Length: 138
Image (tube, rainbow, N blue to C red):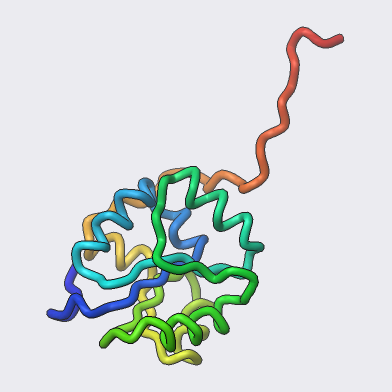
């Protein structure tokens, strides 16, 4: 990915953008080569983000915790002093939040294309565990 010539960057993924990628762990490992800090922000409860990142073995430098995306981005940019702060999202709402907080916005599809990441195919699995059904039960 073209990082504008500087690796002095903080990269934040909206959880849904990260879910749109086939291998979130590989994405984070790749991003660490050209960023200082990388993490996940979301409006979802903390346990949802934690469950997803653990399941996919994603080691993040920061996460949104109990805050929303906008407040998280503001806090992260204050805490991680880098030349650039880039927010990878999926829609116009994410772009508006990036603009409101002074972050650069990058659509996940554009980020994937530029970095050589593979987008997930099909529907993203729901965070809730699947219900177990028993074939041997009357």
